[in-house]
Length: 274
Ligand SMILES: [Zn+2]
Image 1 (cartoon, helix red, strand yellow):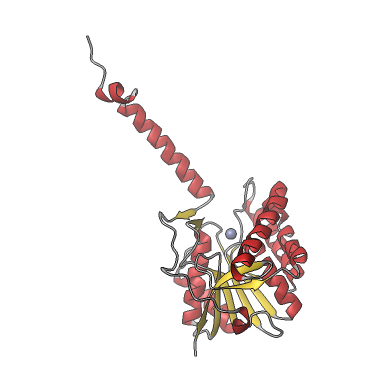
Image 2: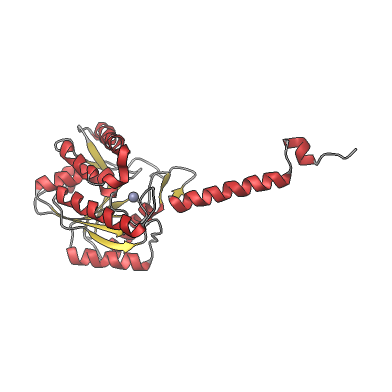
């Protein structure tokens, strides 16, 4: 009598079959990564101790005449994470410039024509900026989903900082990002902070999408208007639009509760320079 292989006796199928299964899973994971390059930390990164809260009045972001440079990865990031703050800045009379590191040529399903997707997303981004009352957005034009915080990206951001001379820089937090987040988000945040350093930026560096918040901007007053910024990115959300708006709103209530305001958007703020 022919004995069955050990693996088949133990697990019910052979190593060869198991190998094929693992290979299949690896291919699926690779495709998923290609589609949405997530970066995953095994453990959530956050400061060892909660950071001392800095009252927003001490930072003074929302005020007339402030020059605010916002650096994001994709043409739509500002909507979900910052629409409230941007709308507050608009009503305060601040001067805001948004710089988007990628051209947005990936977007979401279906990826029929990446050039057309990039064009449409940039058009939506310009419309969003019109609604926030900011300057025309600047696109650095790097490939969506393939952003690396290399010297080329950092150098271009240094140029933007030197040209705009902001008192505030707002960017993704690459030190304490969510455990799972888009690698472009982290790369843009890292490059922005590095560029601030290289440009000898003097002012507040305010990082959003953070697990180490120490301040928040009260965004309750114009929230209904703020979500118009999210709506401008219709091609990214489609039927999910209401859900996305609801989720963004919910976050602001959570942050508001944490920082003692009605609705808030949170940041990790650090003062740089003299
Ligand atoms: Zn994004």
